[in-house]
Structures are given as C-alpha cells and as structure tokens.
Amino acid sequence: MACGLPVVVTRSGGPEAFVPTGAGVVVEPGDPGALADAIADVASGRTPLDGSLGRAEIVRHFGLEAFLAAIGDVYERVVAARG
Image 1: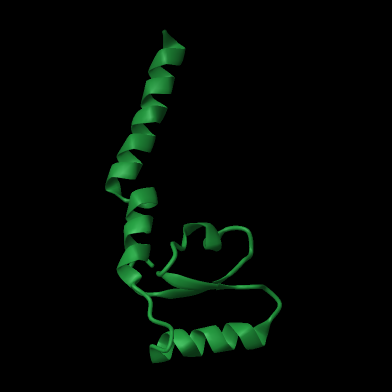
Image 2 (image 1 turned 60 degrees about the vertical axis):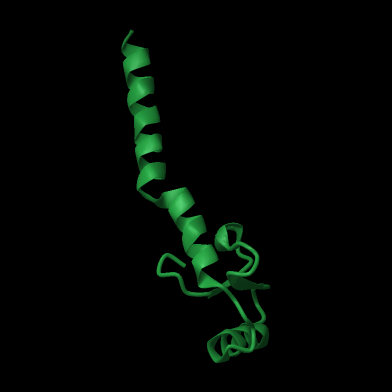
C-alpha cells in the first residue's frame, strides 16, 4: 500500500484495519481459493481498485507528520513527568 498499489489481505487481526474501501480486497483466512481468486482479480484489473487511497491511509498513520506527532507526545510526557 505504501507504494500506491492495490493489496489483497486476509482478515487476520491487523492488516484489514488499514485497507480503505476501494484500495484493496480483504479475504477470510483459511480459504486459499478465495485468496487466489482475489489476487488474480486484482492483478488482472477485473477488480478495479485505487492504490493511491491505500497510500494516503499509510501516510496518514505512519508518515512523517504522524511520526513527528507521536514522538512529540513522547517528549511532552517525559518533560511533564520530570516536572
């Protein structure tokens, strides 16, 4: 997703939370046929997706601004704890 490409993920308690509608396909785990079909559909273009939506989601969560906000919060807590 960070490269702006559509993705295929399984509902496994993590990746599906970051795949916005239209950026990828989520399949149930333990179903290799469904996984293979989803990969084939995405690779062939039969399932039209916009990978840029996924990239935007990744940047929102993990990009430079998100990192700087998170590290700023850490520094603020450390300074506050030291009084």
